[in-house]
Length: 288
Ligand code: GLU
Image (cartoon, rainbow, N blue to C red; front, side, top):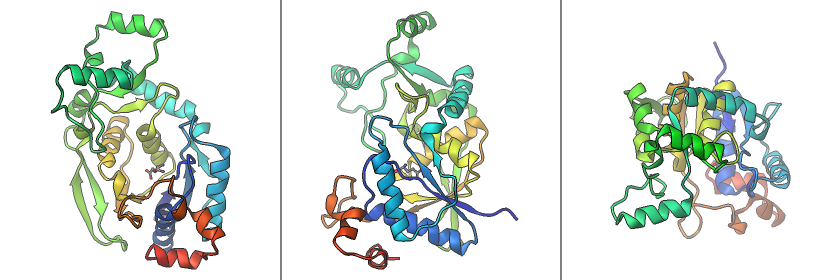
């Protein structure tokens, strides 16, 4: 029997807080109960915001919490060539297109078209206008040749034609005994970015490739990524990658009832440690 494999995948663009502690410890607990493996992945494709200092802080916090993970740790910034190779496949299959509009241009376009009803993605970001998708090939080539900056976006309609019915298996309790099938709704996100202007990948593309390369069988992560799973299922289908099982856990909320953010210092693990809190108290605080 193959071992079940779990992963905790933080981004070193800030300090870990109680929500990360819950996610990491829950992964560890579920891996232990299943007699499986726990991997750590550093998701640092955002080379402007991720720093070695934040990464060192994350490792320190996780060790202090008592997390044990296998070596080596996969650091995404060391694998851009692998992401480039899968991106090239999507380009060759004409499932992605160069998107030239800046955020300001997107805003202006939507305002001009009287876009009060303009659709937004589940995170509240306006969907990308369809202009670039309709650019004649010659014009695209000219802009690329002129070195105009662009991101690669998924043509979600073209992609949806290739992969018709998409679902994922969500396990609905922490004992993993109960599951349900969820319909993936990748269209809700419009033409998502699969490669940013500065690097040959995006969060979604790197995650699906890494989950496959690392043989992840069970993705345990926060509820805030629930609808993102729809996009990731679509990319898995397009790239012929296996689909892990998913468990989207509850979020740890701050005293104001809002989701914790990396700038909330008082729920940061380093601050709590310095204030004298023990790992056992952290577990109790997050309900484990
Ligand atoms: N790197 C992501 C984050 O820190 C998590 C990605 C995932 O678990 O799929 O929010």
